[in-house]
Length: 151
Image (cartoon, rainbow, N blue to C red; front, side, top):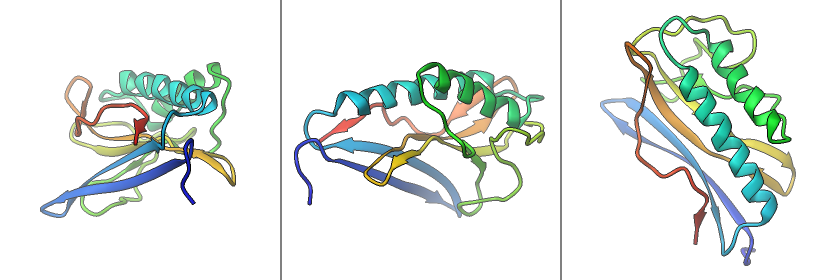
């Protein structure tokens, strides 16, 4: 049952010529709770840190650890990976943004930087971007605002 203060987490994708660009966002029915706002702030700060790290020559582990360090400064911890390679099809099991994955980023690699975290059975949060590694950094493939969407 949906009520004021409930949230909805959505993951979807656009597909063109079999290439996939995934996107996750959290929606709040009415005003989001303070806890949800704090979780959102931590995720967005971690996402910015990860995006600023992405460039050729950096490892997947470096990107993940940039997210983890920033996210932990906001008082939260994520145990699982924070992204994976994708493109033709939803998942390409070749590289993951997780501690220890030393895959070196190269231009035109694409990833789903997905920062979902489930804290308990009743509370979770999702935000993500599909990205492409460029010659000098990163290109975000969508232009969806990074906010809690209020409905």
